[in-house]
Length: 132
Image (cartoon, rainbow, N blue to C red; front, top):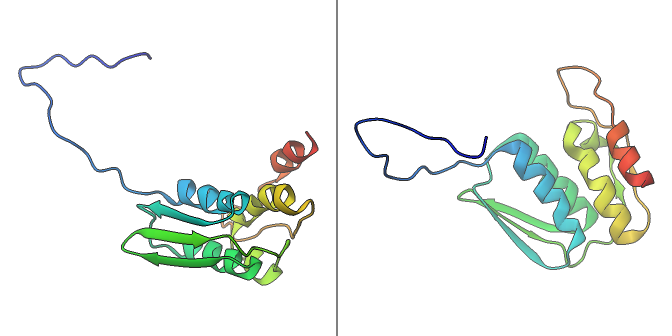
């Protein structure tokens, strides 16, 4: 669909504030590993997985804070390349740090992720991406 045409008696006008989403925030948080410095992310939801990803980044050497839906991540001092199992097992999205760690350090170690009530979900797409 190229456009949406609405016919009606009143013109649409106004704005909609789009809220943040966990499934958007977590990959963006992981991608901050690729750049050295301070990254500010707005409209980040205040959820457990967001804080778990923040703790994972801190373990790797980043600084993380979340205040008023704005996350600030300083990745200048990331030295680690291994994600600890106690964090990885609680959140499926932890596999998202694998590619950025490999790109930054040339090596990475991340256990198989957990945290999914749906059941086992493969990471084969991530592995195929790393092979290419």
